Image (cartoon, rainbow, N blue to C red; front, side):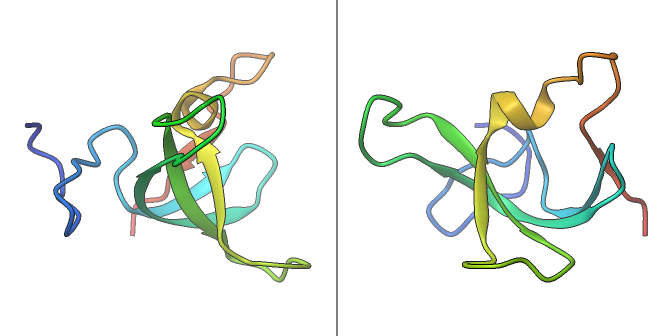
Length: 85
């Protein structure tokens, strides 16, 4: 197993470590860790569990596939960059 932070269920979070991130459009987000989709056509796909640092309508906790989180924008920018604190 990787050397990343381990969640209580034993999942490494090397791909997207917990912490604060800035979206290329300026919004800030807190990443809590990784999860997996439990059903449907993308069952077992890894996902980032995160929360925006600003008010949003509806449920505040969101998930996004790890691939989407790490994918650069069409202009080649980093989509979500870690914020050093």
